[in-house]
Structures are given as C-alpha cells and as structure tokens.
Length: 209
Image 1 (cartoon, helix red, strand yellow):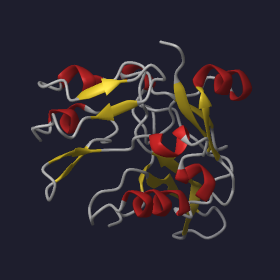
Image 2 (cartoon, helix red, strand yellow):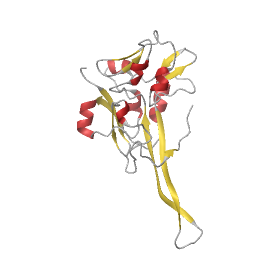
Image 3 (tube, rainbow, N blue to C red):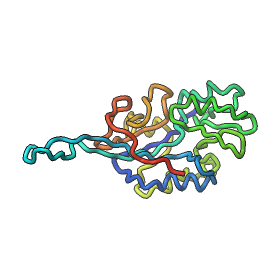
Image 4 (cartoon, rainbow, N blue to C red):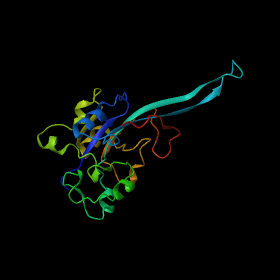
C-alpha cells in the first residue's frame, strides 16, 4: 500500500457544534436517519453528600466532552472481510469504498463494523458510508467536514505523518478499542477523556436526523 490516509481529531478543542456533521450530510444529500459523520457527547460523574449540609448531594467528578467520528477507513477493515460479493474494497491510499453496483444490501458490513459506519439506504437499496470526499480530494480540496470545522480540530492526511505530529492515540470513549480494526485515526484526547473499554460515563447526545 502506497500510503494510508486518515483523520486527525483534537477532542480538547471540540465544542460539539456539529458543523462537520451538517456539512457532510448536506454535501452527500443524505436522507433522514443516515449520517456519515456523527458528533457524540460523552460524560458522566456522580453525586456526593455535602459534608457541610447533611442530606444535600452535590455533583462529584462531573465531566463531558465531544467526539466527532465517521468511517475510520481502517487498516484492517472488517467490512471488507464480511462482504459476500466483494462490494467493499480498500484503495491504494487506504480509503475504503462501497461499489453500489455490486452491493446487494445484505447489511453484513453494517452489523460487523464496530463504528456503525456503513448504513443502508432503503430508497436506493444499497449500503452507503463516508467515502472521504474522494471527488474533492481528487481536485486537491479537503473533505467537507475538515473545512466546516469552526474550531479547526479536524484534519486529514497520511496516517504516519499525523502520528508523527500528534501521537498514537486512536481510541477514546465512546469509540471501541482500536485493536479491533486498526482505525486510521489520531486523537488528541480531551483532559477528561477516558480510555476505550474502561469508560465510566455514557453517551449523552440524542441521535440526530
């Protein structure tokens, strides 16, 4: 493989505005219920008795942070493995694509993907997902989610270059552990970020349309 493209996300600077998700949905003209990029709010904490006011509980260890995620264009994409008609392929640049002409809509990829990236379009009858804005990249432009981010916490590039600049963190809650599919993702964690698989919080955001 010549290279592996990937995303970089700075969770420490994300405000959860969802501009990236909205731009993606608009660019791809997605129907209600299908979102290639999603922004999650993850948080938790507990209550503790106030030592100065018996019977009164106060917030304890409360935290919340946002996480923007789309298809991870994994280095070991399980969706490619499970597709019975070889409709999903991985290009030389690492981008994972679905061939709508070959897809039979069996949804095996949707069930297998730990990120829920492939989504079935009932109107069209085939699976769909983020294609890394391949047409824009071919014209030397950025993926729309990157340009839409008002806080500039989303970037893309060659995975090894992103790792060299930002480190090797590829998973924080609520994402699954990175060892499952080796996602092409680098994250700068939020100060309250929890390790995937060891989280004490839960997803707070409601699924958008």
